[in-house]
Image 1 (cartoon, rainbow, N blue to C red):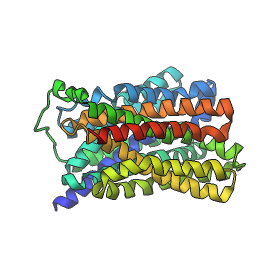
Image 2: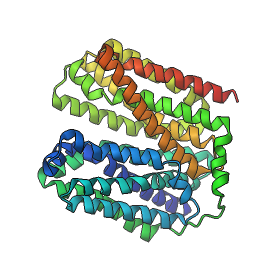
Image 3: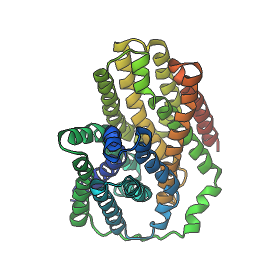
Length: 381
């Protein structure tokens, strides 16, 4: 009976994370519609994505700490309520500034729910099984990124922009009701002081873990950010083929999440140490054979699986360095991952503008080398 309750809890948390990531990423597919609807440029419309991500990165270390002593069920309901309200306002407003505000405020609360989902999922099972529970939450993250864009785009095309925004609210509302009805009250029994949680930053292991995560995520997303550009200019693919490749990458991500649960449960340190070399091998093949369509499909499949495993490694690597402050550690993970994405995309973009699109993997190699150094320095502590 307890196992069934835990499975239901993890399912609700996974769906909740899907709803929140769907709110964050789903608008990517409707940016042209947002630009037309609000009479702004496409670059201005892009603020609904970039400001959301910036708010997540800034609030990542602080918001989970501030709410770490509140009943976890109450906290979940509060965050979901903020997302429902923000999405309803987004659907109804005709003012672009109000739209941005309605996006940024929920984004500030984003790290609270996601870090809490990781913490609660891990605590619902034995310590040995916690990576598998966390990997289920990552399926929600991947699904939010993979399904959010095409589903939202389809709804907006078939109905209207407002209905697409309301879709975000409906998903959050379903999770709100499920949380209210089926998630038990979860008071925090061991209330760590804010100082005790922040004190994990005094450990060199924590900083080496943060550095490794920034570099690992930079290696993955720095190159992935330009996948569509690469497929168009180097592989010479059409729009439909590019869409299929992006979907394949996302679906492979989910497979990677499932594999990561087993790998991190049975041989965590070996998995972390091998990851940069495995991704580096894929990037070498990409550089040599990325101009060929069939090999490119296999490369994208392997790349997506490794990226899914890498996301789990990032979360594990930081939380295992600071197990005494799980909420704060998960907040640090979210901030580090977002910083890695931003820095990675910037550096890899410089390689593209400097020497060409096919050389984007060189930026990825730089980050992989740096991540390996950070990983082995931590293992030596």
